[in-house]
Length: 76
Image (cartoon, rainbow, N blue to C red):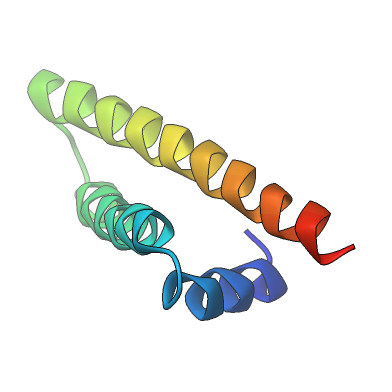
């Protein structure tokens, strides 16, 4: 995600509780994924958890971009 998009999300999340929730979840998933990636070897369960977190993060990101696109359409 580009820095300009991150800044827009942070700004708009003050006005939009759903966007705020999605952003907070995104940051949490990102941290958990990075924690797993720091390990030299992952157990099969950790690999599954990492994939699950990546899917949740991507799904949330898609929802955030949907919300952003509505703001962009309304702003034009």
